[in-house]
Length: 199
Image (cartoon, rainbow, N blue to C red):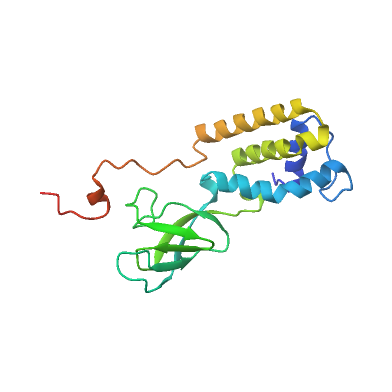
């Protein structure tokens, strides 16, 4: 069944025991509040966690900025739909050997020549592309945002926060959110590819 932003907005209103709206453009307070907060809240909730459904992979070409040896002198432009890159590794896999990098605005600086395979959290805007557990989190997050200005009841904020906590716990328990890569037991010298200490 297709789901729309209006469906999500009405689910957020249901959390607060408020009447549904007919459109996000409707000239009523609930619609104005939901329209105001919808996109920003969606992006914030996508960015906060590494949602499995929103992780995409891209191969990006870089350029040598010529800053000299042993520095982060290779520059890469992030994909346009990137909300945040995930930790970079030599092979682009979650459990790969980490590489040194930093992000500044829409650029990545690292010590590896390209092309570079990156994994990132994408800005997916179609609700039909989302995991159902993310939708539950977004519904509760929207309810938190609009609870006080809409109902003027502080208890409704607590109701919405409890719904948010339950939804987030369910997502973690179902592995809908990626946790960190595998733990490394090797020494740092092995992780960086230096095998001189191995006999």
